[in-house]
Image 1 (cartoon, protein in one colour):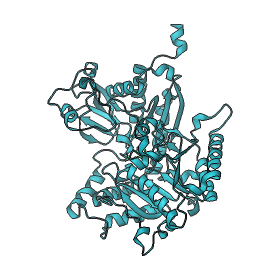
Image 2 (cartoon, protein in one colour; image 1 turned 30 degrees about the vertical axis):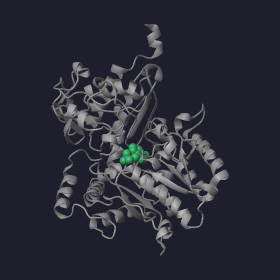
Image 3 (cartoon, protein in one colour; image 1 turned 90 degrees about the vertical axis):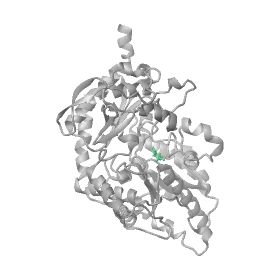
Image 4 (tube, helix red, strand yellow; image 1 turned 180 degrees about the vertical axis):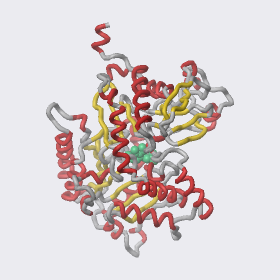
Length: 502
Ligand SMILES: Cc1ncc(COP(=O)(O)O)c(C=O)c1O
């Protein structure tokens, strides 16, 4: 998810322009007419009914109801496109909060779900089991070379984070170290918004209102490469961040259960990217000081960073060389893309020794955590279809090409003097708009202007970013680059020196 910006425009017929489809065909791309920016949704519209009936997430409710932007009413999805109730199309440049991998209404996932629906829609996972849950757990463990396993299922990302935190604490308790009950997170980390996950989230806008309810974690320096001093590399920043982590562990490891990190990219921090050496260094420190390492791959897993698990990049390896078992984290949380963006599914993988600490006759030593829909067969089947697509379409290799198309298509933006810190890791591209030219309320204005260009984008503060589904070709990437540049021209002022010259 991303920082709140007012949501959406009323759905009305708009202008129409030409653009290219994912198949390279020219197609008509409907646009919003500027006059719609200020017109309130008609009372009977889906958007207006939604405002009355639905409490929308991450959305400000203003006392003047007319000031609330009506939500964008989506009727259907088709590949990378979202189509509103008036037939206007929007390229889903952020994969609907980073969940969608293979496009909307994907025929392979649809077919798997239709089949599963005829067989078993749900059964509780305590005392029962079913093939999709077992097969998914086996396949995910195999993707780690067997280093991780014991898949514990849940639904949303935050619940997976809660599970990893509780398991870590309970592990130390069961192994005779009950004092280890504190956690460490990175500056500007985001791990979800339930009370436990908020404790390891360092984004003030989400955290501060509930601070009295949380047990704040220790916050250590982020390896965010944007903090490089003149002459410093991203690896130097990672080394400094590791020194900060070590200083804390040296002092308090006896009380610390786990460090939690978003590997390679801190999403809600504004797609903060960092050097992979931080991961290997953090692994070594956690080993040295006997602290668990939790990899939150909820946003960055499933190929977003170029490898299936971002953690696979923790070490430089030869093509085909497996990551050694000891180099993996102790816990790995996955959600969002794992179901292809279809159904709420999250899970926690852990090392075999973690589960061994819960084997006992005494029920107090058991991990008595559950959710009603734990391991839902439909969600697991969607995930299996997602893994099938990775295999049958050689997605990781093809994404290397797509990542190049993205980089090429964004080159004019990268060269734009109004943008700084242009960066990319696999299928995630981001850049920061110079605050001097961004102006007030930039994220909201950019979002609305991008919709006029037929693109659904939600900047985080001054950071514009792309995290598209893996279903676009070079022509569509180029079209996207043009629309983003047009959006930037529409919302950002000229560079200060140009302003002075004028
Ligand atoms: C890294 C990370 N962890 C946890 C979460 C929380 O996931 P959910 O919104 O499904 O609870 C998110 C959501 O964006 C995330 O990016």
